[in-house]
Length: 175
Image (cartoon, rainbow, N blue to C red):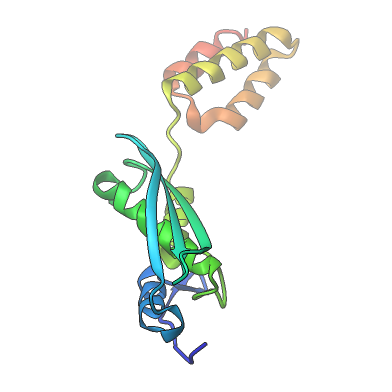
């Protein structure tokens, strides 16, 4: 392997190689001459996609693969480009599985920054999840003798996911 110096991105004190750097290395190295990057979408609809990327050598043997999954609208970039983002991530993972740009991590800078953004974004409960939480909360309150303690337990565990109206409704069980 050459002495290629990958450009990295510092994310929370750790260096990550970006996918474009992995692709540049793969395309310029003599050892990968006549090799191919092939992508296919194993699932693609208006809400989400799964992409499989394969690295194929000159003899047409699959040497490595990488997969990625993206949900439309799950991040700013995925509002308009979830398919492209998915393909890029799958390619980055396939190149990582080949050993390109993995001195510190298989994950690319793009993957890590996306994952951090998702962790830092508060999860919005769906209507079904909210109903399920309310059903469980009501059942729990009804089953407990110390209703005040049960209510405090529910609000400490699910307080951020409950609306003020829901909390008021649950407080009616605490008399």
